[in-house]
Length: 614
Image (cartoon, rainbow, N blue to C red; front, top):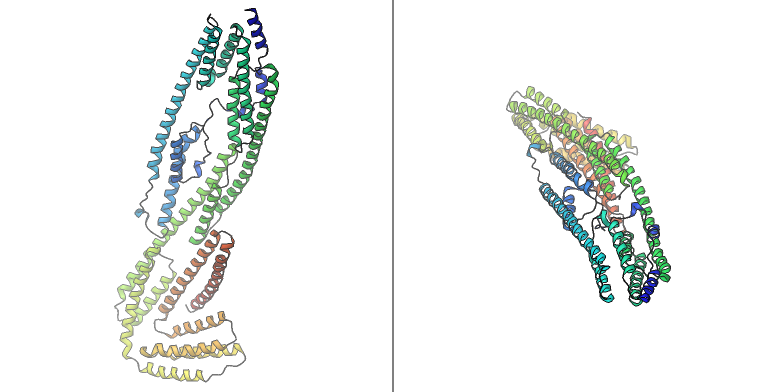
């Protein structure tokens, strides 16, 4: 018995539990130490920048994993975030729907994401509550099991059974202790201290022979060496965050392992400590790098906020400029999504700043569209009244008075701004049809009065022969002056029979154009002079005011179409990635834009020329 006591004391003297203060020296600082439970990885989700369908998709993922991480604040604010995004999408859809003049009353908005969101949100909260309750229940059960194991450990020192049997019971208690899960966090430290106290009491009280004691120390040594090897493998783990979490588990297991031979205590501990230090260093460097990255992202987001504020405060004229600005805001929103995370303390501030600028811009844009539509509705009303006035007198045979009235109505029409796009062509065709009907009736009435027109025809044919004999000189100004003189004389001759009108006019125009083609002018000036020759003929035609207005309307339609084409192609260039494969397409679009701009410039000069006749 004395020999057994000696062996026991020697074994206890060789035990090598690491002091608590040495363990704390190598563990991370308090703010980086996770709770006892290693929570699932929860991706950082900025719900505020997602669309409603994207929020629903992220909710579906959260339900599938049911994470128990710290996302409580985000989830409580999520309905508010969703409603704001839902409202924005609704208002944007309404603005797009009414942009072409369609009444807002016809708008029928469909978005199934709202019902899905609240169903998923309710299900997510229920699953989290159930999971949290179950965790607490399991931990309480585990606490009771470990308290019972401590009681069994206490009872071992009172038994007077064979040493081998008592020691085996002791090892069984240890095994069951290790296999029992987590307990409430506030009981962890006290529970471990009590457990280790009674383990030590057991070693001090029970007379275990040296062989069993050495075997237990060796087993503990092997276990701690295995932990060292696992820690060293974690050093190579590329996922620093995961390595740090796994390290916490290794430290928990280290505390659970009993004593080891005294001569191995320091080297094994230093080995484990060295691996721990490397992982901690990497972890801190990782967070320093993450901090710098977030600071850089903050600068990017601040720049985006500045751009958005400038766009929101700028003044815009017309639909084209507003749409271009809206596209710029949308591009900034897309850039914001991909600009990464920023420091937590700055997130709400910088996002509110950006969101405020976006809201300001789109509120102003909606107000512009509202005022524009109101003005177009007034223009439609004015044009409708003009249609009614012309329709009321289109059958009149008081040719002079009625002609003057209709011409005055046509001038008044020109001064009125555009009507809603949906009704623009319809109201124009109605007005033109009424005017045409009157002037067709007038022309039919005067059809029989063609004696003077026959004389005019002969005069114009004679002038054509005279023009054919004309010889160009070396002075372009003199040539142009002479050609314009021919045109003036042509206009002064007056009307010709309607059946001959187009043919003789076309013959004269071709001859004049032939001379213009021979002049030493660039293509732009040639086309412009030809056009001036063409519209000068309108000055002597019947119903010249109406024809001039009609010609002007055609020019405006063509000009708007070219402007839209240029805007579309310029936007397309902005979306094409700058790669080797896209350079050819960009060159093609650029060439097309330049040619179209030249055509546009010519049309604008033609518009000035025809405006000079009014």
